[in-house]
Image 1 (cartoon, chains in turn purple, brown):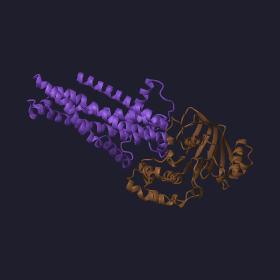
Image 2 (image 1 turned 120 degrees about the horizontal axis):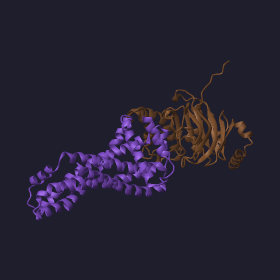
Image 3 (image 1 turned 135 degrees about the vertical axis):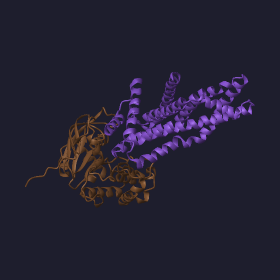
Image 4 (image 1 turned 90 degrees about the horizontal axis):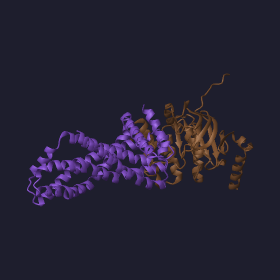
Length: 271
Length: 261
């Protein structure tokens, strides 16, 4: 079975013609996503000496390395959105709705989506450029000649790194934004104690929020990594094509994030 | 006396070779070729004659558009996965090396060993250091490929292809762009591999090289083939190359003779 995936990978990378229609393009990405999932499961224990450091490196790149930027973004989000919302609700005497508003705006929507967009811009573009250059310089063929599955070696660590990175950064962003938002509201003399503020938020959260938040962020990471890796690897490229496909990958990454978000909105509404 | 049958490492029958950049495009038609263990083949051809594409097929990295290609007895078509293990028995030295630019020379050489044998970098270090020493690359072990001259990049690519001790070594235009000293070193080293190098247990290695310059390969019991006009011509030994009436070969040799005058 693992060999069947390996062969399918080769066929992905050998496919010469560019996608001819939107359905073809979507189909190819879904095909790559399925292959990636299959390889991830079937080769979970293969070449750990090489793969584990690569996965750690990708987690650091899509997670730890972005912490300073996310600290700033969390502060900004707290001051600009959360703090103003809190003070506006306080002015109209609607502080009872504070918890549910914060959960819907920050925990369910803004936190995950903003994190995904920032990781797409910062790490996704890097993926396309690195992989596109490697493809154009023939490094993918070199990997295959060494019996190394390019999906396993190049895509799987990026998918894991990005999924875990977006999940962790979303948690940091939500906590940071809620905390800095309260500080902003406090500075505006909003009559709300920190205990009441966090109690309201905690009471508005249920187990489904945690479960869907985790699922949503993993889905963002998986699909952003798949789209960017597809554009970097699974097409015939020359060096001069790399900048063009980077722009295309970012556009399609944004579209994919919005679509995933829409699916989760439906899930929230249904459950 | 009964003759023992040795199966060919590589066999092509009526194979139509597709281009790497566009797999629907046929670059060489109707290749019928057999490489037996211990042979040393030199495939000559002008630039863009399909030499690299032929080697991609010979190493099992691409399947022929038509006809058959068997590597170590396994068909390399897209519906059969049994040939994938055979890839590990082939060492491939690409034109220009195609080393991984983010890694040092030592890391490049260690990668196939660590991946295939599931070793940590420290565990592979001893083997890698010995191989780098053998190829004169020890002083460059910690340098990245971009900082190496083309001569040394080729040696690093050769080290990477040899680290898994392959049975069949294919080299795509290995003499291209090499300086005189490195060119002679490589020719001597490939001869040593073909006769059986002690580092590889004294086992003779089967070699296939492509070239656009036939003269350096003159001599020795090498076999020659020619790629021209999308066709594959089996020529045989050097004396048959010299006596061949093939116009493209004459042209190539005349051009070379002119260039060396």
